[in-house]
Length: 301
Image 1 (cartoon, rainbow, N blue to C red):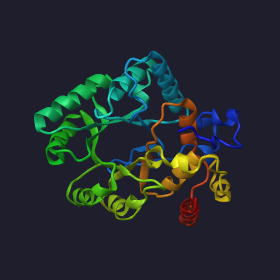
Image 2 (cartoon, one colour):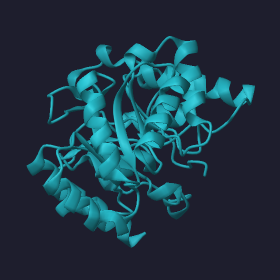
Image 3 (tube, helix red, strand yellow):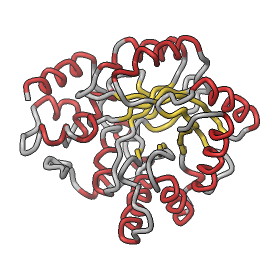
Image 4 (cartoon, rainbow, N blue to C red):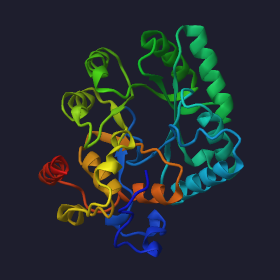
């Protein structure tokens, strides 16, 4: 879906300044990972569908530019999965070709049944990503999560993964996610949360805060369909108040107004869109009152 309200009123020169050159209010916002205190940028990059391009040279070139822009503007967190077709391999190749691996916080997942199959899949992911260790390994969609968490705790002790977690993308998983959060020691939870799908913003975020678990928001645009809802519609006045210059930033700023959200991972393979997305992690913080106003505006669309 093409964005119709791309970076309104912002100059190209201002958007291409590196984060360390910007005044404090325009620097990339970061959040601390509760289990370690390490800080990561609050907007990352997802690879579902967008990085599944196989050997297409033209598409790979565009993705290389996207990752270069992402890194130049202060982005670090890139999330992928063996479920995403060729995305892991493509990402690994791009990071090698750009020499950006050491600057990135790479997250991937295990998505299979059984301990041995899980180990083989994670080893395969490491090979595709051209790494000996990853920052975050997550049990994807809770598949055989008890078995894989046991394996991952061993891998963490050996230094093969820095952080471990679980992931899902549907509201129907939330009850199970809450039970796991309350019974297991995790570093990260990745789950759907957006102005379109706000259900995680209640008990789950509160539980993450209480249990010291970092929260990664996937589907921050509700799977992308949100853009059809705002096509050709002007931004509301509250957007100026919170510093949003596009509908993408409007949605991301609503999401990031929840302090418990450590990072959002909008997926894109478009350099302009990744630049726009990162803009949501700059500018004024959104208050709870403003968040309520933004949600009310969205519900009236």
